[in-house]
Image 1 (cartoon, rainbow, N blue to C red):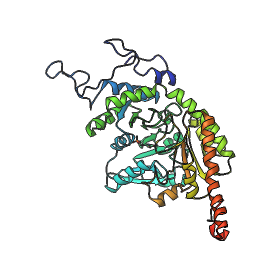
Image 2 (cartoon, helix red, strand yellow; image 1 turned 45 degrees about the vertical axis):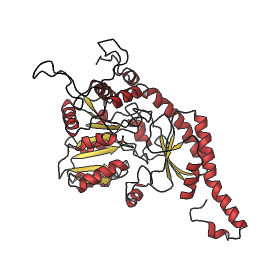
Image 3 (cartoon, helix red, strand yellow; image 1 turned 135 degrees about the vertical axis):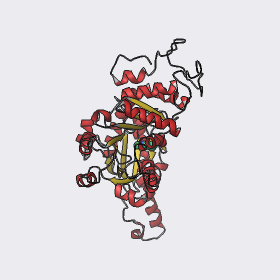
Image 4 (cartoon, rainbow, N blue to C red; image 1 turned 90 degrees about the horizontal axis):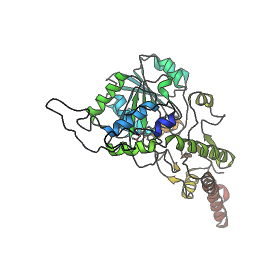
Length: 412
Ligand code: PLP
């Protein structure tokens, strides 16, 4: 790949593989779909022999992401979950993995299921609880898993401080999906591996499911590449091509995502139907100062608790016309999700409650549509989320049912 003479994240992202085609001088590198490559002679493989182990299109994405994350090398996987699975290959039975209690539901399910099979031991803790950290350090952990900001509660942990506390004998992994390397580079803060669901901001157009693992040393990169080939979880060339196309606009998309998010947060703060907002950019967020220190932006994910109960939540989501009710995040289009029944349905209710995920929690992925449209849409939804119950009360009053009987304990 041609060397990019720039350390600027926007330039690195835009120029991913540009000018690397030596055959025809194509500006955008061609897509190599071939599953295999000829040997030049017996026992003389070329740079690539079989697409599961190596592919030029996939390598462009891997090298670009490694540059953006300031790592030694990257591996591109078929999904974000397979990127996580890949990092877990560094664990042996009996090793202890320490993970956040409020991580993404799929991560929680994978960790718990593999631990149940005896692949390793697992402890889910609140990584902001200093006592819990002290206790877990006594157990001689092998791997520390960090997800900051966390999904869906946007909790922030101090990557530098946690990596320092766990020390160099512990493998420190950061899931950087929520911010992308444009806003946070965990390898520079002491992590050994960064994982991504490239499905989200990196691809950014909600048309590819993919993942990546970026290592801080060539040795770790080599191990990850070996396991990715062995497990057969490397991404397809076509998905890699599309993801690289998405990557080119990552920086400019992120800027617009963040700009829109600031306005939506301001609006949500002023709306009486909103009980509580989770957004690291707010000065009232517990770890706002940490986010400010380790991130170069506060991201475009917001969670909030709606006043009322599940009926109000239903009214809200059913009255939106721009925000789509869907899982996933990080695409150009705005989404709303109900974590308790959607992204985190795999997390047992008792663990959801422990982590702070309740039935009134909604998560927004702010897209890059016109911000006034987004706010107008939310305003209609939020107003109606409360109105419907009031109307119901009025209706039933007319039908003679005593008012008190109608008021659930959370009724507003
Ligand atoms: N990590 C985080 C933080 C996620 O939110 C997700 C998916 O939502 C994943 C990993 C898994 O990625 P994928 O769905 O691409 O397998």
